[in-house]
Amino acid sequence: MSREVPHIFDRQRLRQNRTRRAAKLADYDFLLRRAAEDLAGRIALQNRRFDTALCLGASGGMLREALATKGGARIVRLIEADLTHALVPQGGLVLDEEKLPIKAHSLDLIVALWGLHHVNDLPGALLQIRHALKPDGLFLAALPGGVTLAELRAAFLNSEASLLGGAQPHIHPFADLQDLVGLMQRAGFALPVADSDMVAVRYKEPLKLLDDLRGMGEANVLTARPKHFLRRDVLRAALAQFSATTQQDGKAVAQFELCYLAGWGPHERHSERHKEGEPITRFDESALPAKVEPKN
Image (tube, rainbow, N blue to C red):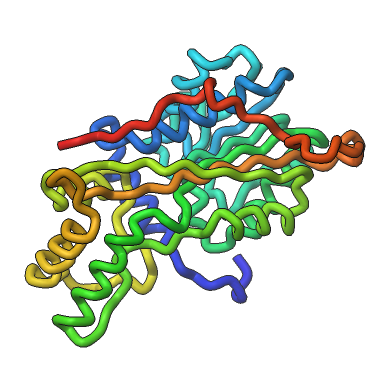
């Protein structure tokens, strides 16, 4: 990685977190499965066959499972990869999204399930992915967007500033949807499109939200994370503020923005003019699953 790239995320700590949580991921994977089902639905809408596909962030095979009911026959060979061997299905690969040893123009489809929000050099990762695509190959991604856990982030910052006189980061920053579109364009994808979906998760006990995040392998991996345990009074104050500002029907509500990206490996057909007002890529909402709102 270039020295000019800010080292925001501790990738080694991320690998450790995902490895540690792999055995019980199924108890906390509701957002990952939602994203996998959405991506599988979008693949099914493509009127074509993909001879060779790669899934980054396999998480034990979630995309393959979703494809089994949403058009998996469109993919002849699916290669599954993850940052940790503990989440790589049999026959898969251990790959780091920041360093992809993939031959140029070798894949018909690349799907990034969830992991790109932990990449330090996201423009570089997208460029590597675009280079790995064949001309007219498709890239799809799902990752949390900027609205995700905004109230929880503010609650921690306010509570620490009030009780300690300063604040340290506890909740990861997430890219805005428009910024993600710009990064897709910079990486050279043809016809880049993006959309997002909000998923509200209700919690009777806000502390369960933190347990869910740890269970997903989403514990704090910021390089600037606090090196000491969070004080109990700060935690209580933060969760109280979060609950008060988000409460609906007696429950705290955590908002997750799921962003979806799509782009193509450049091909001569992409230079054809589209009719004015015609969408470049259609995603039929009826093919996508309904929102899920786990409750405890």
